[in-house]
Image 1 (cartoon, rainbow, N blue to C red):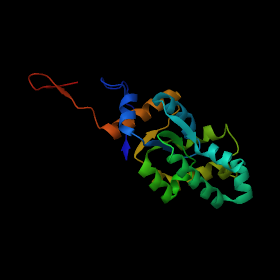
Image 2 (cartoon, rainbow, N blue to C red):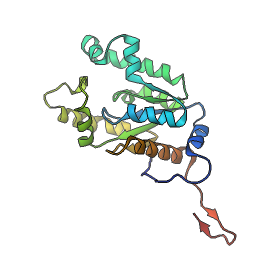
Image 3 (cartoon, rainbow, N blue to C red):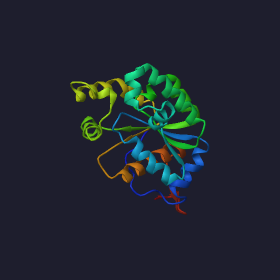
Image 4 (tube, one colour):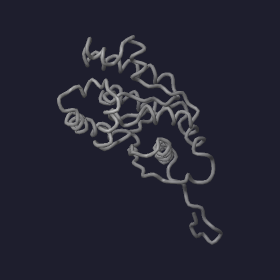
Length: 210
């Protein structure tokens, strides 16, 4: 897993978008993380920057089932939802390269993680509990948070899922900053993971220079 701090101005040379597209080839970028981490918002903007298709796994699941995700949970239960989620993600990964935002529980399935590793690069958008709670309160309909204490429920999900999310190729902090800043952080972290650090140039006397 590559963890990168925000790097500021991209290094000189080819544009970062070109470097990433070249390094990705036919692989997809798969965003993972808890609800409220910003996977869909960041994913759309990232796809636009890279000239790739964007897909939201939750929307694709609802389209395939002709039901909302809360209704799927209520009618069929979470295990059935997870089975459908796995099938949808497998289909989407065959359509790459694209940027894919996954639901919070998708990466918990080993078979899904293996498929993502085969055909993509995984990026964990990691956010602190207070950031997640501020965001999820703005949008209802989260089946797993329909409890007496949503904050405690989310804390429990963090404890359970964070060790698995940490298996991702890249981790980027999802902060309360402009979305485009987080998109840039993701691109810089991916650039470091896929292309490695930019080597220092040498002047004629062999002295390293930026």
